[in-house]
Image (cartoon, rainbow, N blue to C red; front, side, top):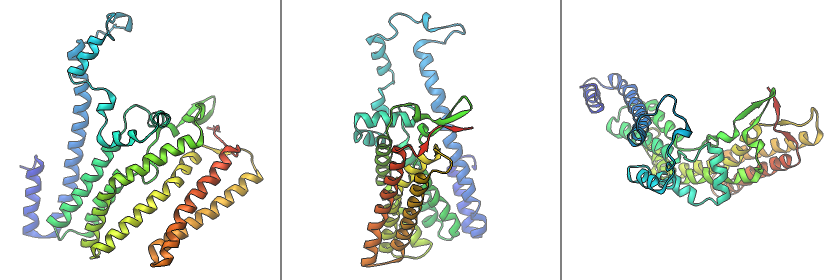
Length: 336
């Protein structure tokens, strides 16, 4: 009975009703292990199913088979029609709803930049959205089906929901990874004609759309945690959720600077202009932090002033870094 997820859930739920909180704590790690096992099984099945479909279409590949051995009509329209008929779809049709939604709002140039920085034609924005939503559903189940659970058990899936669904640190972009050559290293994008604003515009647009797409689930998480953990009203919880989402959107320019800054260094040892540029950036960062604190701690008219200062400080820091980037203050080639 414990092998299936439903059986294990029913067992621990019954033990919870008999003995109380202590035995129910086993429900949380057991549920996480079951979900992790199901996720790994799906990934393995998807990987092997693709290979089996290809083998069914073309037959088993020989050990010494090369491209020259392929028939002349390999790329013929008939073969393409057969691939589509047997389950292979064009990339635009394979993308999930959120990935298509984001790609439709990018220009041709931005789509090219996005494909380069994601490392392939496919993206995983909808998959991250689904994982975060699943963690939020686990939070709701723990909060209302097992009402005597400790607070840390509820905070764990709530935190995982945000980590899985939202680009808290700017997201994972393969184009910023280092490549190595001749005892030097540099970001992958450094060898291509990609301007600072070309990359920044794509990162900001994609990350902001991802945040907005998951914002209803974020409000639900705050409502549940506010009701069960801190006994706050729905209005207060929704307000805090909107404030956190607003700050997260305003943080995105800073995450872009962090992506660029991680792959660069100061051009000269003691350059006066880069030092002044960095000092100005630190001042703006402190202003940004003060505005964020004031936004959560104040009310009324001061809250509006602090709310206006958060994006102003964030984009000001982005402009300061862009000026240093365009003037050559930062070097993209670094020693190992």
